[in-house]
Amino acid sequence: MPPPTSFVPCHDGSGCVRRTGPRRHTTDAASGLHLRRIRRPQSGRHRPLGPNHNDKGTFFAGSQSALLTLAGWGLTTLLAQQSGHPADVVAVETSLEYKLPLDGDLQITASISEEDRERFAQRLSRRGKATLRIHAKGTDVDGKVVCLYQGLYLART
Image 1 (spheres, rainbow, N blue to C red):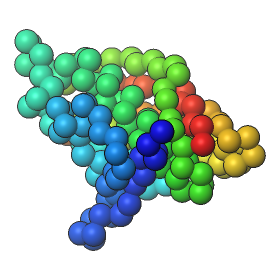
Image 2: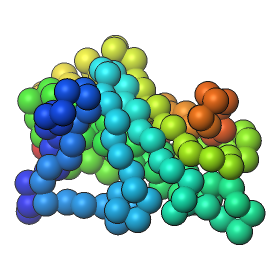
Image 3: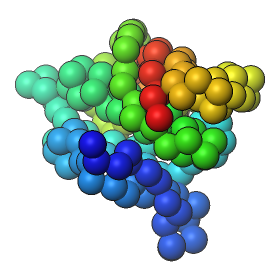
């Protein structure tokens, strides 16, 4: 089995992290996904409308779903690595509520509580596996919420 994906700091002083390891998600390349910053316990991602628009000129719902799922996966993977237990991560349950059509870029913010982060790290250390519920929101460039997401992720060392 290849080593799990990991994240390392960017060297440009921006505070961002970049993914390393053998795995690349098609969604990353096709949609231009860029992890902008990690502020424990949340991560922010920015997605341009360009490659993600539908026939109505708005952000494709399928792209939103895939990108929010990937944001949760990335945050869970990063938290496993930060806990000292790099892990393989899978999404086991997701839900997404669309609030408004989006006709511009998408900003995703995924977050967890400090209590959930600590519980996740303890369980991962003790049992070699743990689940983590991620909450995320998608906003437009003006900060209006366009979608709300929840995902349950399983990490295994």
